Amino acid sequence: QVQLVESGGGLVQAGGSLRLSCAASGSISSINAMGWYRQAPGKQRELVATITSGHSTNYADSVKGRFTISRDNAKNTVYLQMNSLKPEDTAVYYCNLISVNGVSYWGKGTLVTVSS
Image (cartoon, rainbow, N blue to C red; front, side, top):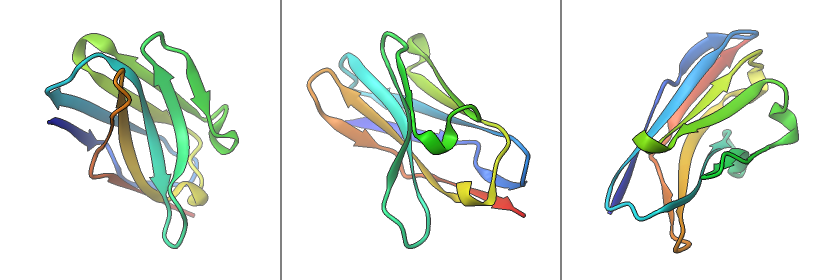
């Protein structure tokens, strides 16, 4: 089994910053990609950013220029630096890992609340 543990969520004022971390542990085969998704109240879960083992990145248009995803392959950890936060960024943020075998794993989520 693979466990993903997120941390770094919290309450921040609009314009502020937060850094999320997600550490993967357990029976991890080679990792293909890791990423962050979010789900706001009453909305579907949506992609925020992903990063491959080769450090290629992909971002949702709504966060481009404000969020930066990075990873430490040696630590099986992915980070999300969130700057210039907006109230519409308020959501539960979920970490995702996809193994080279195509298996997808999810963390339990961490709440980010941005006040106006």
